[in-house]
Image (cartoon, rainbow, N blue to C red; front, top):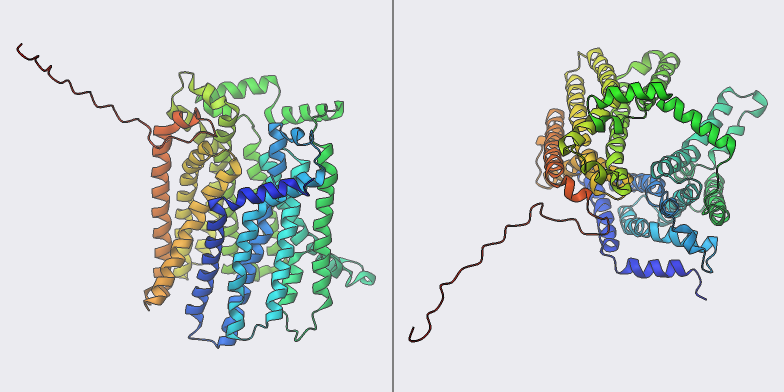
Length: 554
């Protein structure tokens, strides 16, 4: 019998996959680009030793956040997907054990991430040549990053055996990772600050599970092989937690693939929640009639009446945290730096949330066949799109207005700083443009994608990250050509604003044209079939009618 047969099969498949090679190349190119930017911008001002330290620290932290968050994307849904499709039980009709399936899924879903991480290793060694970074510190950081990647992937595997929904697995994995990384150290910090005096200093134990503790300790000033004990304790603690989650996944998986009847109490709570979110029969009828009169698809998407309340609740919590910081720090909290952080956080939160909602509806309806049934009715494509946009507007319009009002107040508070006013104004305009573009692009990507979270990732990358990548490339070329025009803040802000608006316009036109022309074709195409590249097949040319050749002598 082959040991871990699923692992062997997935490795053979991945070796023939084109994306396996391109992922490594792209990761290495990004790492080289970041190192090149630092090298060209900082080399005239600092020594080579300090330059090497800057490059090493920047690449290490970039790789750390990649390793920390990649588990939510790759492994969070790999087993939950099998449960939703009902194919997980087929694996247990064979001699496979729980660890066979878990490790096989772990390797299959994380192989490209491991290859991309390995491609960064040679770039991390560049600071050794510049001096100031000993080789043993580089290998130590590589060990910490590998341990962080293992922890993130293990968290996704365990959550995938506990839940079924695509978005719930992603969010729970992300919350679990953030709780171990940030939440537990915050508990320790609160114990040190507000706990009883006999327990002063006991909160340091809560810092050990966080991978940030190990990476932060690795940059401290220690020489030779005198590595701090706190670093090894943190690495060991994180590693034990990761194996603990994998062992729980081994135990949980054989017991979770069967569908079990819900208990009476669970059904009762489920019914209470449904009535709370949708209302009783009279409230549902009134709400349905009011929305159907506007647009039938508007009601189909906005049936959950509490969706706008969720957004308001999150904004309310954010407001309470902001006022708590204001009470604690007084005037220091009113600095432009904290205003920028607040506005950036609120803008990013609403953009990510809207992208998730815009992608979900069409993706789920196409997978279940509901979208094809809708298209069998007299409802036109334009009405379907309008209903989705109305639902997004109902959920996000007024929260977005409140966020814009808050940022406007921040802008007014710094009227003496012209650069600050321009930054706030550009950010508000970009926020409106991003929300509108992400609404259309989310519908288009959700229609085309099989999994809604992958569609969300595509939308976020195209709208939020792609302009920055183009801007960084332009800065690299400007540094190589010794062009100093981008050194001015106004020029940099104008270039960022222009690239963002052009990027929004291009993606909006592309998404709108695709939805208007190819909506019916894609909605009725199977996922395993290749999407048509042309909406309308070219018209066949009429056959030439040749004159009959007269017979000889005729």
